[in-house]
Amino acid sequence: MKNKFWQLIAVMAIFTMALAACKPAATPTMAPTTAPVEQATSTTVVEATKAPVVEATATEPEGPAWCSGVTKGDTISMLYQWSGQEEERLNQILKPLVDQCGIVLQPESTRDQALLDTRVQAGNPPDVAFWNVTQILQYKDSLKAMDALGANKDAYIPGAIDGGIIDGKWLGLPVKSDIKTIIWYSPVNFEAAGYTVPTTWDELDALVEKIAADGNVPWSMGMESGDATGWTGSDFIQDIMLVKQGPKYVMGIIDGSVAYNDAGVKEAYEIYGKWAKDPKYTVGGAAGTLSTGFNDAILKVFSDPPEAYMVKQSGFAGGTITTQYPSDQFGKDYDFFVIPGAKGLQGGSDWMMAFSDKPAVKALVSYLSSPEGGAAWAAAGFDLSPNKAAAGNYTDPALIKKAAAFYSAEGFTPDIGDTIPGGFSSAEWKAIVDYVNGGDLDTALATVAAVQAAALKK
Image (cartoon, rainbow, N blue to C red; front, side, top):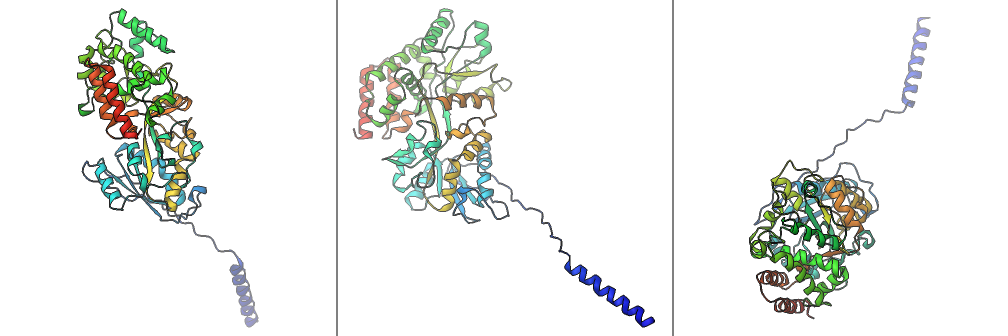
């Protein structure tokens, strides 16, 4: 009996072990390990600063179409001028690409273009560089075509990519833009004086005359900027051309089909000169225009009491105002309006150039020109993206207002002086300074037209 009992116990034990063996094993859960997106250290003027490598997540990516051909751990070396908060925003924009494709970014930050020149000349350029439009022309023989890398021309607002097309090849991708065809003013001061924002060029002209008739000064037009004195005048004159002639005319000056001493250019100079030379219209008259620093000119509109009521300046003016007057609120104490009657916008962009066509670079180009890339740029608030998909994704009030003008513009024209090579910008600035000083306008324009023709080989 005792033996039967123990036999029964043995049978039950074997049956229990068999059941346990048939039960599925529990799947262990591993905590996700995500490498932080790290920032490059601060810039130096002389040499680049290597930023810590920006790693992707530890999991194998199953990214979207732009990740095609990329192997996890593929690297992209990058050189740019951004630092601090700008660099943080760039990393925010690129994080989806890094995470979804498994790409490792190797950025360097410098303000010294000579470093980029040296690397290109030595045959050891970075995979990509974010720089200025003139470098696209300078490095054209070393650059890869953007459409061959996966960029989509249709993703961009009219005129945005034109500056990156050299000899029929699309070599530069515009990534970060600012608009210049705007006038800054104080809504509080306007209301107190009984002025309203004009909606047409004729209304702007009438407002200028009314402010002057009231004994106030309409404009603050100071343009002193060391060796670059004259550039704010160049911007203003180009904006007048956009009102009177339109963006195609401006692009004609840039490609050389319209000579710089054309009648339309002269008309714009004369309108500008009427305001820039006369103390009735601008702070200090001609002497004030030439000697007042361009940042000081911005602040004169927002002083208490105001020294002037309007200043034409790029989007960066908002930062100048809030630095000096940190308690001022956008939309109340300071604001801007697009120059009424302008048929297009003038602006500047930072451009991406690719010296490599490896899969990771193709992924970067495809991502930045995709709807997701455009939306990510806007969400980061890194100025304006010429990618149309960025529209509707801004959160900063000033950027929302700029974007409304940016995406509805008939055309986006680059700065003439920034685009024509061969010392053109210096010649243009000198012509403006000479003209404001009382020099002969026809002579000044003829001199610049000769430089334009030589630079563009017309």
